[in-house]
Image 1 (cartoon, one colour):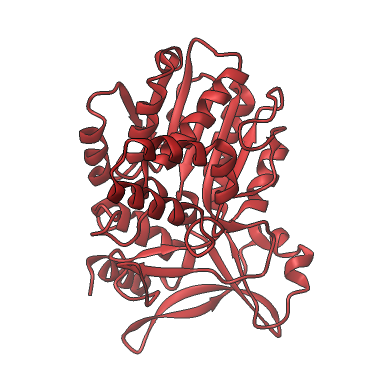
Image 2 (cartoon, rainbow, N blue to C red; image 1 turned 180 degrees about the horizontal axis):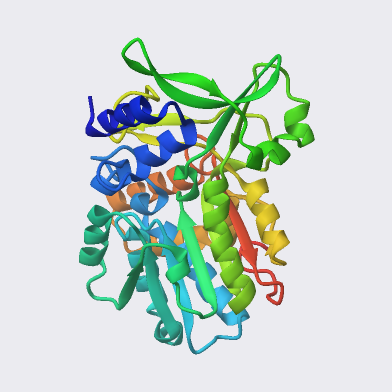
Length: 359
């Protein structure tokens, strides 16, 4: 039994069942035992591999998006360049190397990494030691400047409330201890989420349907949105998800790249769910931002010019390096890998013309 499971069992024994959202928040971000707090989950030795870990081309395309955004913002002499959930710092490293060819951009950028994990902060500081970088734990700490923000595979890790529909309507999914194990149990609906579940997509769903709602991801996203609304700029999110609301069940636990039991070994496995981009879009539009239609990751990278970059990289590469470049490109673009599964969502201040990839 993991230390976190001991903590959860003790909490249930004292206070009664907890929501799945609370369980997921503890599993991912408990300050002593949470999955992201205690380890580096990335790469071949971790539980998953992200686009920046596959190829430098991923970060290079995002660098082009940022430079394009900065120019369309009027090339401000000072702006915040921020990444949420920066992993090992690979994406920011590739980006800063690429924008080194645009020295005015780099001079104006106040670079901030939003990261809570001490383990990952240590990796980031080592990787980015040659750059002027600041760290923050929350987006509220960003400097009051125009903002170019990006995050890759961040919001899918935020806790979700899970619901199951039966003959009596929707019930929230909670956790208790049953027969010596963590087990699911029904809970009453929280009043705050009743209006969300009153949408037709949920009221018309058949019995047995699931629903997933994440106030936490919407709240975190909302901080970025309000910053852009107040100071200008744009934000880009890359993740797997859908344009909701949709009655759907996407929660999964992952260990070493494979599916794992959802309630076993909390704190030791990654728990994730698809992101409802529709809910985020409504947050952005409420604050007056422009929100662009979802793009497939494949289409975004193609529009940013990744084929042109491949051509340049292969010009001076050995045959084995050329083959590796082709393999990496396949993983980023193919429908069998990341190209269709991952979506790109962009919001921007309404004063900006369409940004790179979204014209």
